[in-house]
Length: 197
Image 1 (cartoon, rainbow, N blue to C red):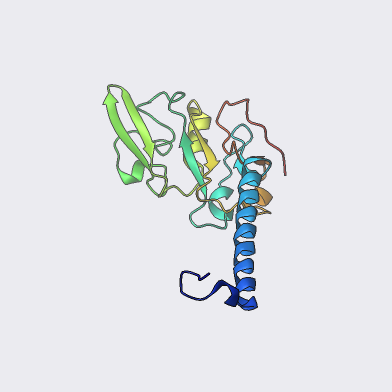
Image 2: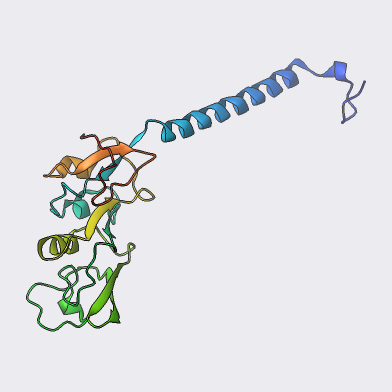
């Protein structure tokens, strides 16, 4: 009996046999480890997130994250937003003229865009690539508005450090561990369970 390459089956060397066995064993091991890692991510792994009900908008998310710009971004709950002409998240305090001039905007990176809807309503959207997580807009909305803005750790950017540098520096203790299968805590969401670090 011959193999496909013309070498008789009886002439398979011990080295060839061991090489094939080792390759098969490595393949099975890699598949098993990948499966366990995926299972762990779905069942029991926890990730860092910000509890919007505890966050005091201190600004440390922008400066303490190991990623630059920060993995923390501003999130807008449109269903809570009042679409105000005078938006305290967009305009600097004491602004009297509501135009889009750079000197009148509160955001230091101009990550917020103001779009006219109909008188007197405006929609505010965020460019996450520009957002640094400084929380200035969140603080303005929370203090003088209806609180439709809040900070969240973006899972596609976060490294999920074992000892999160932002969590260590957070004066309010707003950084919490949440299940990886439910990685976001939405504003007003009572269903999300979090554990304090």
